[in-house]
Image 1 (cartoon, helix red, strand yellow):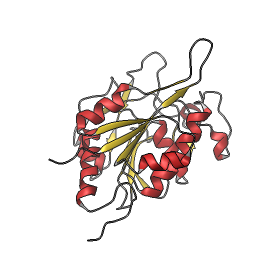
Image 2 (tube, one colour; image 1 turned 90 degrees about the vertical axis):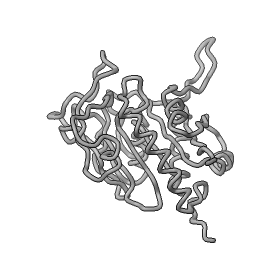
Image 3 (cartoon, helix red, strand yellow; image 1 turned 60 degrees about the horizontal axis):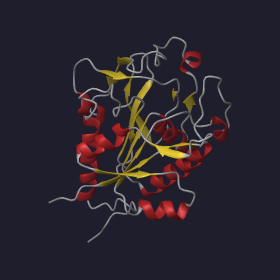
Length: 255
């Protein structure tokens, strides 16, 4: 029997207010879909120690980087846009260290929403910080009154997204106001909205299995086809194992 892969999932952090203590939280869709796809989800709070993080990553086979509120652009040399709702600094500090560590290890990664944005910035790409201002001709990518808002998706032939969706009309959920502008050199675009906004990326590097989606396949508003992304991710982890790649260290094992 093939052992199920252990898949880390970061969590959001909410600072205590009044009678409510500080706590970590994560949408159930992330861990439910990893489990359904054949992985074992391992939830990871924002740790203070980099050494502790490295020890935890040594035990994992892959990682899912979740979405959430906005990362602070001032940490990357840009200004905060009035439309932004920044996440708690404790989570952001941890997430930035986490992405660096995952990248060094070439650990299989599924990055969703803000997670994909951070991944792109970490690898020297950049972002549009407010789609209505930066791309005024674009379609609506967020509806404050409809969390199930959707738009079309155009996938690149031969890409992982093509394996997921195939031919035919595709629609995905959309609730973001930030999007990738320049794609980092180590990634390629695999899906866009019909207006050209980047909706998915994957790695160009053969030794690093990465899927990034701006839309949210873990959402309750996601389709049955969207779940295939999690299945493809778990399949990719098994393929790296079969190829003799040590997922915790990123080193190829030579017999």
